[in-house]
Image (cartoon, rainbow, N blue to C red; front, side):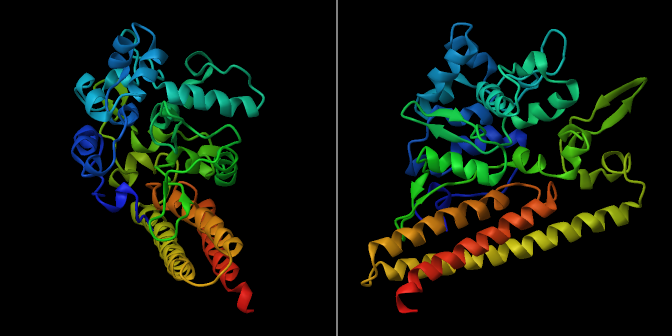
Length: 344
């Protein structure tokens, strides 16, 4: 599925924020492609480096680091995410420090009728409890020769809206080694999928579940041991859901098992299309048929990957995750029909 893409060379287990900089620095993907400094936007604490590079202009520093080779940009950063990436160091109030998110949320709010949205002055505190996470847990691409990190939200957060954005601007991440298809690699669209779920619609923030409140003496603070809510059901889930831990865990397990089964079916369907498309290129099939099948592969692969790369195994929005995977299966089958239509 990812033939010809660096992930086919090296893809390892998820290890969390403590390892985010080292894992990006030492991955074998660095050996097969010249990655840009853009990657550090989410793999390091970049607020100070951006400010230094931009001579106190955050966006100018962001633009400069984007255009550097990764190895050069890596010299400017020292550690993974730190307190100042999400908190004002003087007041400890939540804040947004990532230019790509500032631009992305402004474009999203614009289509909702809110012009010139300034996230750090106009967002509510509860919104910021999700926005600080969404600085990085999102879908994105590197725009243009300058490799500007961009969140494709100008048409909305639904996968169909993102797909239309990518098609309109002819965005591609790589060309598939076996089929010649121009493909997109989904990243980790937790924010986008979460927005389609019941928790987002109910006003529940990322931090409410992944960083639940706890008591330290007379103070109530957010738990900064950021982890799965399933490891802390009492404070993450039972604050709202008055059921036993066993019941709540069973509900999550059911959602994730069903999503995983559908994900496997979508993968099987996509691999069947890739194999058939690879063989068809050696036959006398028309260019029009090949291109139509490639178009369906592009859609099937991105829809599948949108759920596969999202880290909740469907839990953030169960119905939406299953809908996306079902559409992926359909696109794969339509691609096969495009290849076979000559013989029918």
